[in-house]
Length: 130
Image 1: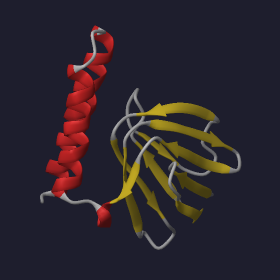
Image 2 (image 1 turned 60 degrees about the vertical axis):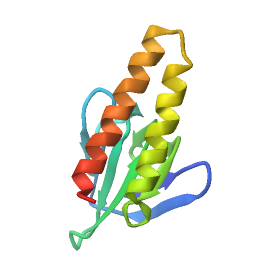
Image 3 (image 1 turned 45 degrees about the vertical axis):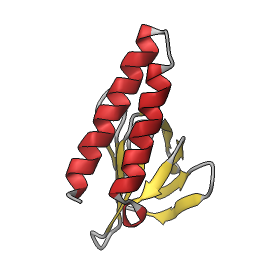
Image 4 (image 1 turned 90 degrees about the vertical axis):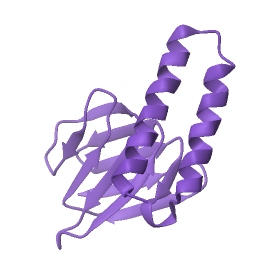
């Protein structure tokens, strides 16, 4: 199936894959050919695309949407960074930015959302074992 991952800055991946793991807000989704058409929001986490040779591409996304249809999967990420470009400093900057936004918000729901994203980025940092 075709998979495309797009961020505001660039197209990070476009090609044929066997499966895609998405960090959907309602829980991780594994998409394979023939998956039910769906549109879902994404939380901070890793998108993993695997090709027929079992090679995987991992990209850390922070929010966005995924559309799953008969043609494949398209991810429009708010922010996306390939694993090979990640550093502890980049993740720490993301966390600091979110903390600043959270601290400046008076809306409890927004503050909880920022706390959740901060937690997910901390989990991503642990997963990468810098």
